[in-house]
Amino acid sequence: MKQLTLILTSLLLLTGCSDDRMKITLDNTLPFDRTAETVEISLGDIMTALPGCIPTELVVTDRKGTEVPSQLIRAGSQEPRSLIFQADVKSGSSSVYYIARGIPAVYAKKAYGRFVPERMDDYAWENDRVAFRIYGPALIAKDGPSNGIDVWIKRTDKMVIDRWYADYLSGKNTYHDDNGEGCDCYKVGRTLGAGAMAPFVDDSLWLAINFETWETLDNGPLRTSFRLTYPPFMVRDKLVTETRTFSLDAGSQMNLVTEEYSGLDNEFTVAAGIVMRDEGSPILFPPEMNSIAYRLDGGEGGITYIGTVLTSPATAVKELEGHLLIVTRYSPGTALHYYTGAGWSKWGFPSDKAWSDYINEFSQRVSSPLKVKINW
Image (cartoon, rainbow, N blue to C red; front, side, top):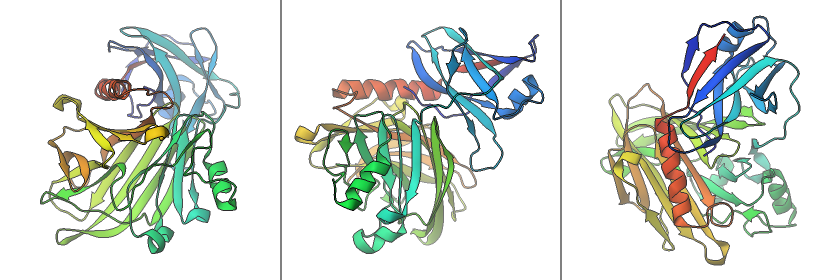
């Protein structure tokens, strides 16, 4: 499991440390190895350990001194707020990394996204495992409204969305067919698609329409993130507005999604949903996992797997309005975080069990983040 974008709590130990580097110890309390898991360190902590350092001149190394790719996180601001890198920590063990002054190498891009005005205002994003898109305002006139999440399955670690769009628009190829790297074989329509969220009030889903504005917040090499705003839509007799923020890290099948709603005064229920098709079936989990999953059998095209993991307690899992739903509560004025993503039987997930195991481990990682100790 290669993505957990929850900010990890730092245990600050005031011990002797050289001004040349900052020591970070990561403890894994879970009974399995955690590989290429994202660690995020605030720039304030780094500046305390390395006074006067220049954020763009920081290098992360492992215990052996090997440089580890990193990325400054701006979250839409001009100035960086934190630094991320990806760590390996064996089961029940710890790993040590260092942040030091230096000129970082140029790292290969493993996460990327952009607004695609040439294809009716899509926003598309990807990493070295999977790709997604979501629909903008220009598409409404052609296909009607849809605020669900689309999946592009991949079997290459290369960034492909720019080339796939270019080939599609030039008539060279269509991304709806697998040309050896994957394809868009997932249909969204007027649904939540692959795990989008909506208010779930009076035992009904209340769907927004296509996003209205977009803002890219960060864009590689390890994380791509962006924010979408939606025009007001009706929930019962109230107009509600919605903001969604997506974040996808290298190596992960799962997006971190942050939902913010305004317009309702009291706590209400929301549901993340996976659209159900005749050729698909749910994969069931015990309630304590706060997770749902689905398999969509594409015949010779393989099986597309979808999974959604909440960070807040699920109040129900149900099949309703053509969706597999996982329901939780939302408090006005807060942000709700959850994860949703996809995998493919032709690249990494050859069986239902492989996908179930992935979601199971991911759920445990969400509830038990790496313990981060900073020494300065």
